[in-house]
Amino acid sequence: DVKVTQSSRYLVKRTGEKVFLECVQDMDHENMFWYRQDPGLGLRLIYFSYDVKMKEKGDIPEGYSVSREKKERFSLILESASTNQTSMYLCASSSGHPQETQYFGPGTRLLVL
Amino acid sequence: KQEVTQIPAALSVPEGENLVLNCSFTDSAIYNLQWFRQDPGKGLTSLLLIQSSQREQTSGRLNASLDKSSGRSTLYIAASQPGDSATYLCAVRPGMGRRALTFGSGTRLQVQP
Image (tube, rainbow over all chains, first blue to last red):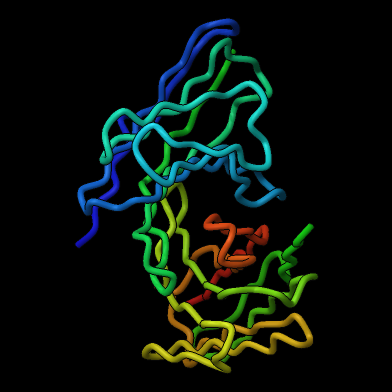
């Protein structure tokens, strides 16, 4: 079974802090994604990566950056956390095969005070 | 820009009832469409994936249909059970060039015992 793990289930941070969210997948997938999920808005893509050190902006990249130094690990960085970044963050991965779905981690619920 | 809409936003039914969840998308040039299930506070689990050339997919009590030309998909759940209670999300992959998914905001289903 594909496993996607996220470093924390719950995080509480203060405004202005630098926040790291880590995601690891164990299936040698090429593609990795970060989404945020907010009530009534569904999932929105923040960034995705299609290879080591390669990244592309999604629909809402402002205030975020990412790092992919190893194929299995994709990090989301909030350079200076703000209250409007309070959300559920979901990581996903997929192979390069066009018929394969995305596999999701359990999510990190982030509260910025 | 692709937009995905799911109606209704919430649904409550008695156990044993057959039900239909609806998904519509604005741009018919999609590569595939997927249905996911999300339990409260958890990540997403893929239920069914329909390629753009297909009309439907079935898995157990679930059947998903796709009418690409009209921009619609339905998820049919037969003989609903309390364990089916969850949020169901529809997502489209807009095309080969974009690997990320565009999600609807989901239908929250509650099946009453």
